[in-house]
Amino acid sequence: MTARIRQMRRATTTDVTSPDTNPAGIESLQARIADLEKLVQGLQDAVYRESQRNEKRITELEARVEPSALAVALSKDARDRGL
Image: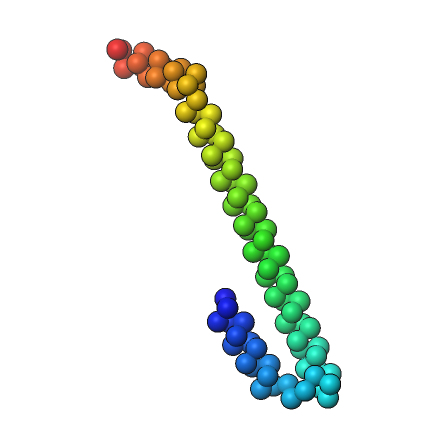
């Protein structure tokens, strides 16, 4: 992603001579910044959703290895196997 940003910066420096003399260049940069902001927001949302999934998974695993839950599971397994 950083390589893409650097590439975009290089392209803008060759396309835009000076921001003061080229209002179209400013609009182009503003549009690119808006696109980048949308990408960052999407990335933040994805990271948040993934962290929520991981948190839920860890909570479920912790509940399964609690001594009382583990004892129940072992007891049930022993009964199922006929031990």
